[in-house]
Image (cartoon, rainbow, N blue to C red; front, side):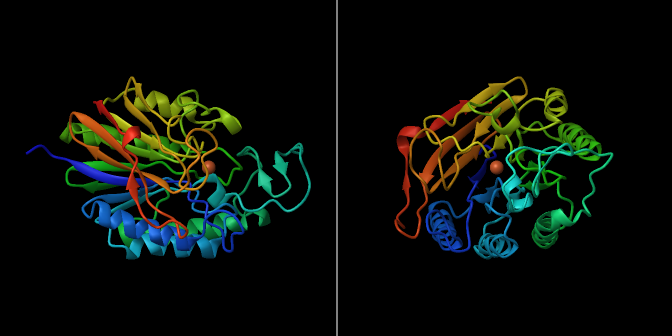
Length: 309
Ligand SMILES: [Fe+2]
């Protein structure tokens, strides 16, 4: 029997506390129940943007919904919406320091400090995230890896509360390189890497809002030293039909549709993917996993794909 890893990936759930339109954690609870029924042995990956306005209570409640559902394992990262806070004001142009009211457009290491009063949402959500990682995965770092049935799943994670892009420290880049090298010493199996932002210039619309961020080329250079990597991302909200799996020199790039709002492609909310990974192939089965309004899940067979690795 060939070794196999099965996982759901849900991303960009963008729950709000009291939505007039859009998603709340009540919708997520339905989706989670459906995922557990569809494939009870599959673990769960969340690609970030749990929230839209970095609301700490919505974020914490949603994490607990996933944790309480009994998935065999859980890996997740933070999205820009989870950390950037809420813009209070009218400014439409960044000032000379890169601020758009309470949003930071870029990170300037010489002057920007995480202790800035405007980064309260960052401090709250990262504390909740790190407590959650400690509880379920045994380590409080923002970035990290888990091992499931001989497969490794690494999460990249932003270390700065930027408006749209991620920002990875040199420590995180070194960790990525050293982790991939160590895994490759002991295993030839595909390695899963998750990131909220897609790498720039890969998927359709991956360059929107400035793309991945400042460390884009460094991440590509590190991944390029390895092979058979499955790199999964969300953030750009391509719906089914536009969200694709692409070949890269180091493996496969998977664009996962937003659960909440596809901006292009199939105009259907409530989407996640079920992935089956073996040493030689990746199968992606998109599902409608339900909302409060429409709780019955179904496989969207016409969007299934199988790729060789
Ligand atoms: Fe995002």
